[in-house]
Image 1 (spheres, rainbow, N blue to C red):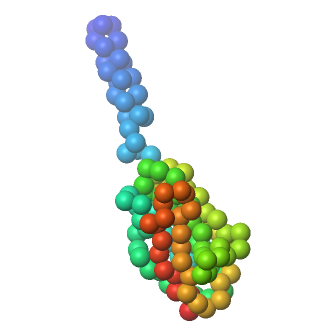
Image 2 (image 1 turned 90 degrees about the vertical axis):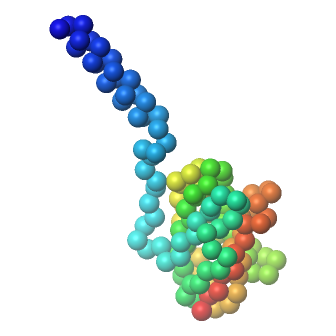
Image 3 (image 1 turned 135 degrees about the vertical axis):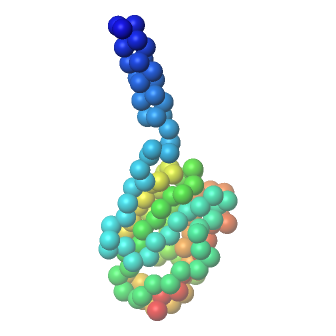
Length: 126
């Protein structure tokens, strides 16, 4: 009976250790309810959409990484980065958020990580 109990405990210990190593048990971070614009970095060095819309004024932007590599997010007007707004997500499931004040107009969202120049999307602010 003692031998059976020891073997059962060993099997349970191994199962618990293996489940702790599984990436599927990782809970992604969540964004606050105040986020009005949500942007996702997805595999293939792109955003989840090619165009986004927001309302002029203070815009709370949330950034979610669905990829396995680091990404950033900045807002550009023409060739100029707007303010100090700069979000960064370093791993899958990571989130970042921040607020930016934008007047009505057309902007571009960019990832500034070298080699990620294909990660851009239009942002129309009304």
